[in-house]
Image 1 (cartoon, rainbow, N blue to C red):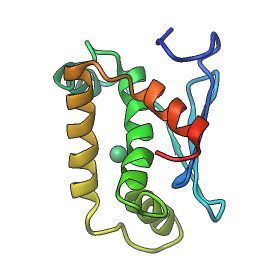
Image 2 (image 1 turned 180 degrees about the vertical axis):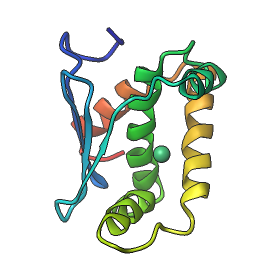
Image 3 (image 1 turned 60 degrees about the vertical axis):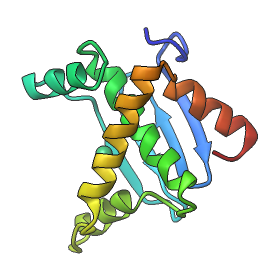
Image 4 (image 1 turned 30 degrees about the vertical axis):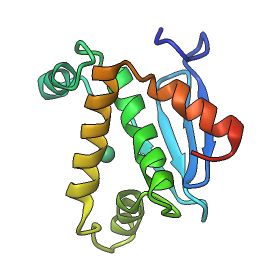
Length: 137
Ligand SMILES: [Zn+2]
């Protein structure tokens, strides 16, 4: 069990840029202000494990994925955006629209923040929980 999670692994984070929930089975759901949902699950491929090593997670793809989803929301809040633009792009693409053209920049920022947080010992889940309690990020 990762630190900061309930015994079942469930988590409910509410930030201005969206609500994040992690369920006991590991499924993660981000709900945007208009009710649109972006679902995610941790990958376990060799590429995922290698990324989890590279970012400082000792191969823990569950925790890497959890932090990843949370940093998308935290970053949107820090930048004063109403929601993660990449998530809006995912929602648009599901209904025949196109991906947001800047998604690579958001992904790079999220991954860099994750790597820095691991390097300096910042617990992203604890950070998100504190932001939820304060109603801001
Ligand atoms: Zn992402």
